[in-house]
Amino acid sequence: MTIENPTLVRLLDSLEEQGMEAILCAAVHGIFAEASDQYLLAAGLQSLVTTNTIPHSTNGIDVSELLAPPIRHFLNQDRSKSR
Image (cartoon, rainbow, N blue to C red; front, side):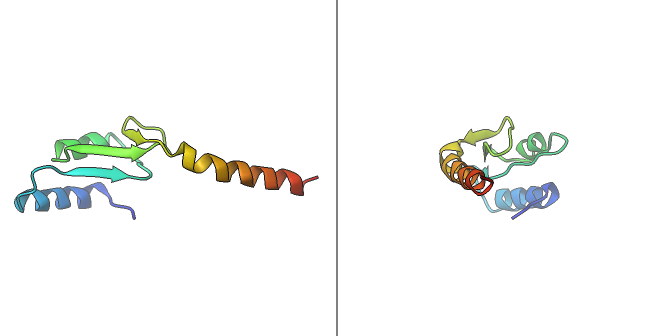
């Protein structure tokens, strides 16, 4: 699911209005344009963590052990087909 900054900021505002004290966010593929991650943190997001599928300063979840085996399997199958 893709959430653009204006939508996320409205969500942050709504959660703060409802008394939410700590707002944390985790994302699988963090794509941040024009320092939007800093904008979200300034808007009230307490923490922002992403997987390392796209290199970024917010990377805090390493998924390489999950992705490496199926990628190796796929590459090995592809090599055997080309022989």
